[in-house]
Amino acid sequence: MVTKINGDMFVIEEVLLSINTIRLLGVGGVRLEVDCDEFYEKFSSGEYVLNDEVEVVEFTGESDAEKEETQFRIGLVELYLDQVDKGLKRAEVERIISRHCFKNGHRPVRVRTVREYYKKFVSGNYAALVPNFRSRGGSGWSGKKDYIDFVKQKALEIYFSDDKVSKRSFYNQADELLRQKLGDGAPRKLISESTCSRILEGFPIKSSLNGRLSKRELNLEERRAIKKYRDCRVFAVVELDACTVDVIARDKQGRKHTEVTLYLMRDVRTSYPLAVYVMAGRPSEMGLYKLLEQFFMPRDDAYYDALGVTGIRIVPAARIGMLVIDNASEHFGKLVWEVIRRLGITIKNTRQYRGDDKGYVESAFAILLKRLFGLMPGAKKSNDKRVKNRMIKAEEEACYSVEEIFKHVVDFFYGTYIHELRPDLGFMYGKPMSIDQAMDKELSIFKPLPPPSIDKFRSLIVTMHCEERKYQHYGVDFRNFQFNSAELARYMDKTGEKDVLVYFNPADCTKVYVTKRSDRNGTLIEAQNKMIGVPEISFDEAALLLAEYSGDHIMTGKDYQRMNARKQIKFTEDSRRKTKVKDVNKSVRSNTKKGFHQEVGKALSKDALKPRQVSFSEALHDDDITPSEWSSGHD
Image (cartoon, rainbow, N blue to C red; front, side, top):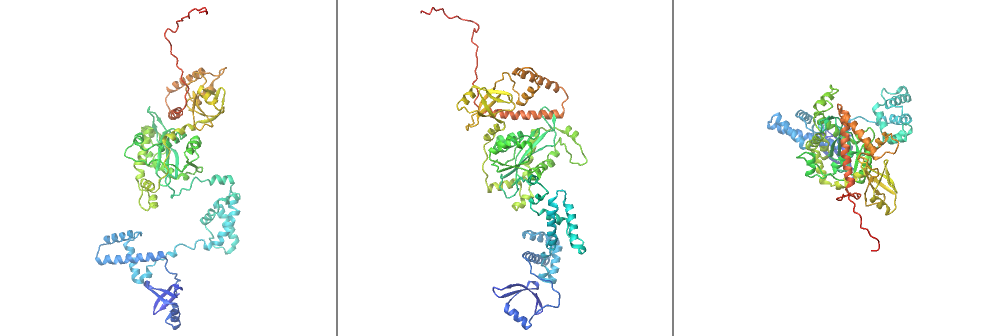
């Protein structure tokens, strides 16, 4: 209601019934407070009248945001007038206005805009500078309520009951059904396709069980790895993954190979790369183990010397709360199910074909490809989209070994990348922030639990190769061989228990390590292969030789030696051929696996009870026979 008082226009801003007062707002921000009884008496006397001479738009008063913006604009106008009176140049005025905007946390305002504010202020005073934030946007869905209810009903009947219907098809059907309902009076546009899509997305997830999806399909689709909230603590959620490095490398003999794998662990809270490892060969459990070993190692001088880098600092390890991994085959072996779970780490698997479930580690791979791997000599992909195949140039350029690639990755991550300012961290902390600074800030607020010792982690490697067996009177049957020792027989005779756990090194079929299933002390007894003369080869190689054997009798240790010698002769003949990249890749994988199995063998034999070694020494004059003295037996 607009009131005319002594020729000035006022609107009722607020009615304060508690104190019986009416607050009026006039042009230029003038406020007038009148007693309610007096206000009505003035109308009765004719001193106050309603303004019926002009059309007045309904006024509801400014919002808090509009009041704040108006006061800021008035301040800008006053500041502008002060600088003009001083006779400053335009550049100096712009600098002063920009500084004023920055201090008040406001976006920069140009001098031209301030001049427009000044013109409006002169002609209309306070009311001319009041912004109309309330007019932003349209009426939204309020005017489409009946249409939306109709579409929701049809969505349950059509879209969520038939998997053949797409969103576009459902929109066309819903639009036609709605027009049939309204008849000839239907407007040209009833509801948009985007609105229809938002309606479908707003339905509960279980709506698809009406016939569009089965319960199993819905569970597979909606399985979540972890909701990545930025408000979690450091080390609470860690993502881990492996990717193939698109760089051709050279081995120690100078041969080129194409299989190089990068393993990475990244913290979700700060995006800090907790551990990185580069290894020759395809993704495997061995690489996963080496990455975790890299993470749990103490950050001493020996650690940095092994990396081959100087002048960098890597945050020490801590206990991980949850590890997010994908559904790769190497993540379903005993390393994950035995070693990681024994450390108290919760495992979460991502959905299939959804890299966004572990977006932090995937983004790191993209950054490495763009800023490091794509620039290295031997890069298999070109930054020029017109170059489709770069393999020939890559083979000519290749000069880095896997160790050198690993060193460059560590130097890039911890020497450059974590010290760059990140916009997302700046928004989270309210000031420019790098990954390294964010990690330091979080560790100054909250300290996670300390990690297990590196020796404890390495001791768990033996659990990766363990199987259950029954102990017999002749020993243990395992992988086509029999194993036993005197120490094992005495150990098993103490309780008469038959259930045992067999720990083995896959690369050595000459011995295994046995313990009782109920033995909480973890006593390991070394048991030797009862087949005399069997060569020190892997169990897989022994099985292959057994499959190739075609003799009449049972295969003996000598037969294994002869079959293994034939295999080595074939290797010698094949080595005279011109090496191919495929053969080099196979050789590199074999060498990597051999080194890993050596670590397994050392861990097994470290605390195991070994058989007593019996040694024979030849006496002097061994062939001479000295008869005993004759005796009649009566002496």
